[in-house]
Length: 69
Image (cartoon, rainbow, N blue to C red; front, side):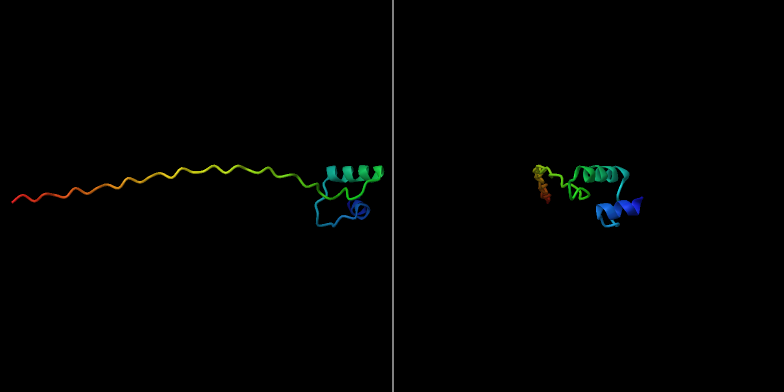
C-alpha cells in the first residue's frame, strides 16, 4: 500500500508519508489536482526584537587613606 501510494503520488520515498497526508493526496488525486504531496509553505511571522537595556555599572571610588603623622 505504501509503495503503491508512493508510485501514485510520485513522491520520493525519503519523505515521510503519514496516513493523513496519504488520504489527502489520494482525495486530491481523485479531485484532479496536482502537486498535492508537496508540503504547503507556511508564512513565518516576524518576531519583534526587544531591546535590552544596558545596566550602567557604578564605579566604586577608592577612598584615599589619610596617613596621620
